[in-house]
Amino acid sequence: MMKLLIGTDEAGYGPNLGPLVVAATAWPINAERSTDLFDSFKTLFCRTNEAPEDRLRVGDSKEIYKSGDGLSALEKSVLPLCFSFLDDKSDRASNAFSNLLATLQDAKSDLSLPWNEGFDPNIPIDCERNEVLRQKANFESGFRKTPLNKTATFIPPKQVASVIEPNEFNAGCKRLGNKATLLSDTTLQLVRKLILQYQESGFVDKIDTIEVICDKHGGRSHYAGILQNTFEESWIQVLDECRESSEYALKWNDWPITFQFIAKGESHLPVAYASMIAKYLREISMIAFNRYWSEQIPGIKPTAGYPVDAKRFRMEIESHILKLGLDETTWWRLK
Image 1: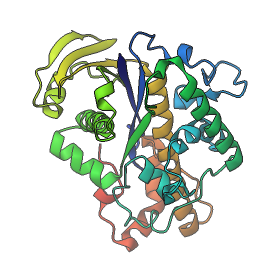
Image 2: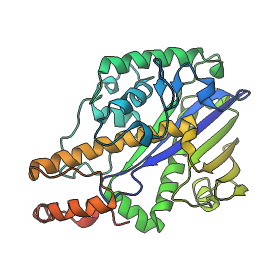
Image 3: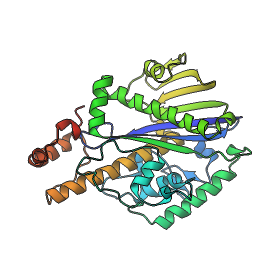
Image 4: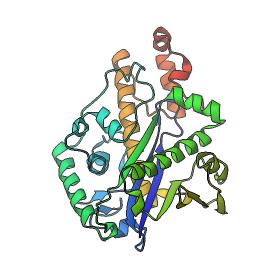
């Protein structure tokens, strides 16, 4: 029996500047084995407090990436997985950032913003590409050999993401009422997308159950309503709703699916990987943003976009924004 284990997380929930990025990763495993993938894949991955020993470091993105330290640590962990299982005959195997987004089944929501126009750096940005490709080969070889994935046909893990720029963010908050609901709606749509990708790949008949683990969304404890809106054909069973964990069960397209929304979800490898992917995409988006403004206003201090510093940054660029004629909702997140 096979189980599909899905983890989700976000980066950029709180800032006023830059995108909100949501990501999800899916891992097909032997249903009889532990869902603690750190233990099951201990030759491939390690936690942030362990010595890597040629393994990929996985954990809360805030522990792996520190502002000002560059993207190398994130790239060494994220890109071997994201580069894996690409069709070698496809131009997606090239090293442009846009091709990474295409691999993750996403398109940036507003390429017309001045800082996004023409921005398509080669990746990795801060670490050696040969190191990423070496780790990619190690990962693919190790994952194929793992006892968690014993099927006649190799079933790969998958990743998807959504990059929500300020205009789409503001419109979504207005449509859904608040940003917590926007986060939940985006997250569950990505979960649906991952499941359907496995179905379209012909692997779904090998999967018996699906477990989804999400980091909690804005501190909320009740998700039955948003689950019902996303999986409207299903009856949602509430198993538990409390401060630490909210759990649900449903059946969708004949698959039994359980959802857990938990605090500190990054302790689970699928959630941690989603956290790192989301952080990586957001940080590259902020490179584009800060690079543009450093060219317009030499000497301006870069921003990470969080509320206090975002207000400082907004004051410094205000006159330039007026000249560009940009509506506030296209570049400033109102909530």
